[in-house]
Each structure stands twice: as structure tokens, then as C-alpha cells.
Image 1 (cartoon, helix red, strand yellow):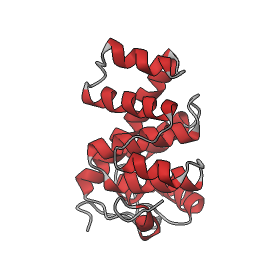
Image 2 (cartoon, helix red, strand yellow):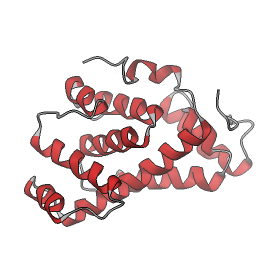
Image 3 (tube, rainbow, N blue to C red):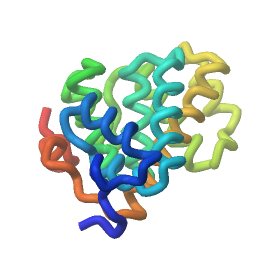
Length: 186
């Protein structure tokens, strides 16, 4: 059970209602993350706006989802690991075995994706102060300085979501249960 109220379109603060309704219409269900963020209209707006901006980065959808899964795993947010697993498989087209490896902090066997995940984890672990070798390995995989900053953007989005879910102790929505670590199988 969430420690923070789960808002609905009819109970949410007025400034959150249209945003909640938009998410509900786009997803077919209201993720508990959004229901919690709706308590603070500015937090919900920040999440949706940052998500839209992140979606315009030069990283592919699969790469952006790998960043989200890696960050959520390090931040201990099973809700976000589950949600981004669903997106990685259903929308980004990542092979289930690759996503399963991401969930379990294992190598995927895809050099570029593994370099991205290594960089993401190093970025979080060092609070952005990655070593020269880590940055060079990221570049050697074909990434650019702009994409290094786009990983920072993705981690920023993940931090907002992961910390909000961790604060709330959100239950994972029924629609995402099959994608939970330990449940999801390739």
C-alpha cells in the first residue's frame, strides 16, 4: 500500500487533473507513480515534461530504456524496473533476453548497450564524476559528448521517478506485474 495518496482523475488537485487524464488515455491505466506525483502538480508536470524532452534525445528508445532500467536497478526501484521492462520489450523492441540481463545487472552481449549501461551505472555511482577511462570506453562504443549529457538527462528523469516511488512505497500496477524482476522471463 502506498504511503502517499494515490490520486485519480476526479480527486487529483485541479492542476494535475488534465495531466492524469492524459496519462490514463495514453496508457489505458493509471500508473501508481503518476497517481502519486499528481499530489504535487509541479512534480507531475516536471516528470511528464522531462520525459518528453528525454524522448527527443539522440539516444534510441532502446538505449533510453536501458538507461532507465540501469538507474532504477541501482536506485532500488522495482516499480520502475518493471515499467521500463514493459516498455523495452513492447515498444523499444529489445529482445527479452537482453532486458532480462539488464534487470539482473548482467552483460547483455551487445557491446554498445553494455557500454551505455556501464557508463550509466558509473555516472550514478560517482555522482557524475566518472573517470577518464569510463568516459573513453563510452566514446569508444560510438557515443558522443552530447549523448553523455543525454545519459545525465535520463538519470535525472529516473531519479525523479525512482525516488518518488521509493518514498511512496508504490505497489506495482497489475498491468506491470508480469515484468517484475524475478517474474519476467525471456
